[in-house]
Length: 497
Image 1 (cartoon, rainbow, N blue to C red):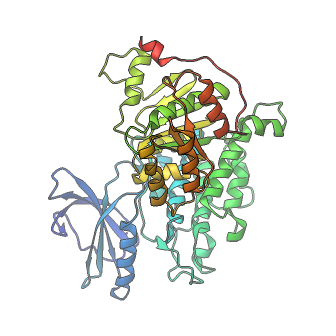
Image 2: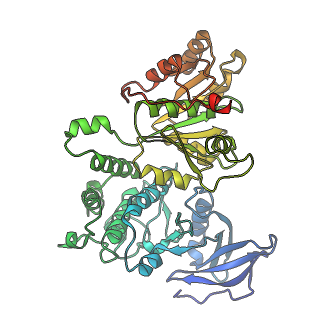
Image 3: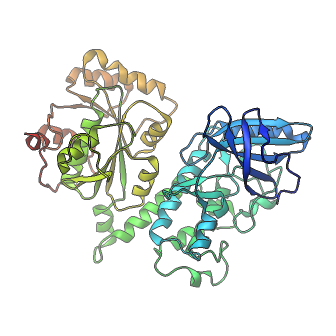
């Protein structure tokens, strides 16, 4: 229970807008209430109440502003902050997340979570940690544990409590306040140093061990291996052990590093028996993400994404093409043609297949993270055009970011404008594709961007069909990544007729 008496009760109004309905939970430092929005009938929010010492109210206010600035699909939005100095009460108003905590889920299933969900869950956690840790002022969560992970009815993961999160301050040797949950918090959270990104990675290791032992252990002790479920991938054990090292310098150093190791380990396990390690790594080099972003409407991003996906499918195995924008209609129309669905009647399944390519219609970012934990060799993301935060993040983190811009002479500058607007981000991996561009336009753009990965795409009316000229361009773009094994064609234009 919260040590201080609450200032709220049923019917209390916070900020002249949020009416308290009921208590959702409480802990040693805070209480969380459900509240109805008096300005938006039917809308509910979670209101977190904490009691702060008036002397540190400035720090609390600064931290609240930091939390309000966060924007990630796995974090609740924090939309309001109120403080009442006389009582020391502070209130954060945030999204109300429907679901149950991972802790409650584990209790309900006697400590059992399906083994196929563990690595996708770890990748989802790592995705949000990577977002927090790579901000201009890194945010350290410091309390990663099952009680702070919410599972929605759709089994999507949300990180729900930022009660002791802090901004990393490079000038400090130690944290001002030592907080964290015993069993999940890193050793440095109790006086041996300042917490940083590696502290959250320790907590991730504790969380994974907890899941892998049916909720029995979160710390590596003698004999714990005997409690790890036998059906789990054994490559998880060395990863967990490294995450749980006592000294931060002996752990993984970033969330991105752990993501890479999880993928490489899973890929090695997926190699066919009897192959040498070198051959297995050549034949299956891990899931690669290709992100296709259009500079403007009509630039041809979806057409290019389809062409790239079927090019890859003709030469390799397991390709997923993901439509990562919820309002797009291109894949719905294609599904109608492929499955013979009457026009305007939506299919109950968002996944359909065309010549070995798995199409995922109107997909969420959560689904993408789950797909990364699967067996696809390539995932191609059709991001459409625009630069909203979610899609831009996926573009920037892709293995092969493709920018598609108009090849018309008077539109080429659109690409340089995009590059300049994102110049704070590394661009060495970017590839620029110009449909129907002249060789002079390509030469000039390479010079302006000081970048040699600029390609003119030839006329390719049916992106499902193999085209020798298009293949030559894509062979250059994906040089050294894939070998050539051809597959049959779909022929969208023929199917239409």
